Image (cartoon, rainbow, N blue to C red; front, side):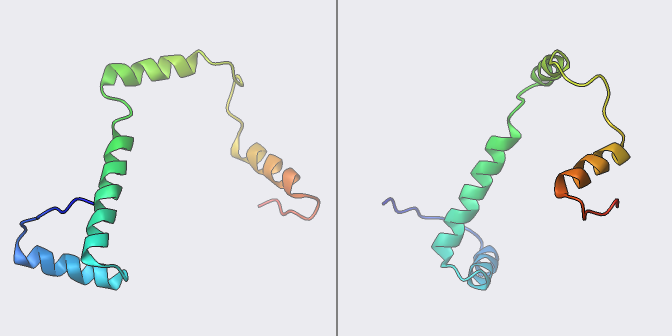
Length: 91
């Protein structure tokens, strides 16, 4: 396992250690968890690297077969309630 030295302001260290303790974690485990969360967030956020890629995605979606119209909310509710059984409410 690698060892990493981190230089941060004392105030940040104190806040991070305090939060780690509140979450029942060691400071080291808390930092690893925070780093993993940040990495996952960044990887999700880069799904479309340019506006052109986003436009390409929507053009592809428009080309998919699907219903001609989106059902109204009341129709969605009827479908949901019908799947629940005879005792489901209409709200």
